[in-house]
Image: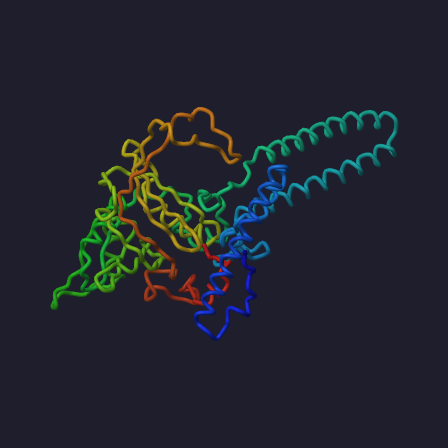
Length: 419
């Protein structure tokens, strides 16, 4: 004889043995109900496949990235949480709508003026207006084609590349050293540590991530001169270095990274976590001296583009493709994940799926090709904490000495991000 599902109140019985028995009965009955509902739903969906599509669309999981909240308005200053790509697209659509409205108004005014002119002038103006109308129609059709030709947003926005062409003018005027029309010089980086540091090996390993870098340990002798960050930057500027990297430590582990753009700043301060050197990664490879390719992913706000521009200036603009090395800085929820890989193109195995596009269709021309990755290391995570106008906090003067600083209250709303 079957049993009935006990009520929830019965699970709070005073007797322990009785409570355990009722709980087991309640659990079995709940599982039976879910199983019967699943079988019943399967039968209904087999008869009507549209029900399954509706259920899958309704049960789509939403992540925090998909729930992300943006600031409203057209403000694109530093610190504003606005998607510059969507802002630029909205501004272009408004400008096109205004132009179309002006064209329609001019055409109506031209028709009214033509009615008041003489017959000869009327004929000449009609010919001229017809030509102008044809040009306007051709221009409008061209704009429509360009609008249709624009690629839609990717189905995976967390892996989209950063478009530095969207940099607002206000950001370029505030940081002219980074956003300059003159091509930047070849990167030359000086890597050092905090005073009395013990992580010389980790600092050297970090220096291998950036081409044309040199590690210089700071003096730990008790009678040695303790050079400040500004003195080190002056030393590096005199020797044509373009940036200084200062690695900070705690408990003999790297915990911070400060990047100074020479000769006069700005200075970016990051916290560093989850440090794993390459030799501790399973199946790791050994890096070579080739210039790597650089991937900057998911930097969308003005602050994000500023951070992406800083890292872009640390890598040579011409990668050496024969090395097949790629360095990735992937931003997700204000954490920058730094990885370095070596890639190889190989034939697709029989058990692997083909490469598909954004619509789920197989891409033509690459049916039998797959890409393999081997991580080289090191692996770590960065989070932006502060931006100083000059060289460090001590070297920045004025009201705007600190351009941006992380505050704990910024993370009260889990759906808002700065980068």
